[in-house]
Image 1 (cartoon, rainbow, N blue to C red):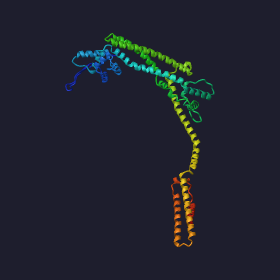
Image 2 (cartoon, helix red, strand yellow):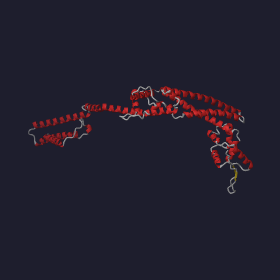
Image 3 (cartoon, rainbow, N blue to C red):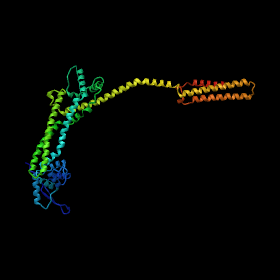
Image 4 (cartoon, one colour):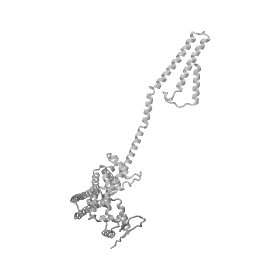
Length: 455
């Protein structure tokens, strides 16, 4: 037996300090721990009233758990009482006063444990019930999922083809190796080929991962710990009944006693139902493994968490690979469509331009200018012939006027030629011709000058 030693001393200070004297019984480590805990707790008197009446508004779950670590031992209580009797004029330290207040509460430990169970029950029940519900929904999702069936049948067919066998099934742990197995030609994984086959032959298939959300949530739960939590709930409920019986021997209001009794009855019924649900769901999980083809001797050795994680990770890999396969198929389809319409678009465009050119505004404008230029030439030639036949013996003044008229017609024709040559490319009716050589330009210039001189 180890004898605990306490520091029994009256702390006194000099008159210069001006501090009051305090009785310190606890060692420094224990005293500091209690003083730190008091900073987050209500005043000691409020704590005592809240514990006696189970007041949830004055003290929360964290406060109760903190007080459970501060419960004084019988030896600590005795030392504090002896020190207070020996020095009635000197006050106790804050830690000592708090422990003395707690020691005045009858059945303190039983009250705190009963209250902690009451405040903690709802959250604990939720931690057990929700994973069981997810497991049940996950098995329903896997059983009714057509995409998963098509994937497994495709994997089985490929495996039989590669191995030259006629197996009726395969171990589910093989799903981990599917993304790692690759072909020797294109270095694509077996999962990529499976996705390609499923997408081509089963267009109504999905990405699988978005349809098994309950399985993904079940993969994050430790079902062994869940069973232990359920066992702890049952044990704490039975202990709470014993605590209530002990507390009822002391001062306890009848209404509060009835309230706590009803609560514990309800908890006991719900725990019994929860245990039944847990047993049935686990039996259904074992049946589901048999439905998937798992041998009967290894059914109970498979963990729910391991199984859920295996399928969840495979579904995630399948979704990623499926998106890549769909992107590649879309790119190939777009490429084939471009090859089909590449030459056709250019041909249709050129045909449309040729068909619309004779009917355009530019063609009509050029035709009108051509007709006008022909009319000017005809009028100038007729005027020149009439002048020469009617006035063969005219004076030099008449010759000068006819020569001036001819010059004006030539200037008009030249102006129209320059205007037609210098107009913008958009106004031209005919498509742009390639540039001619310098020799051709010189010959054209010479011909135009010769025509002007003849006129």
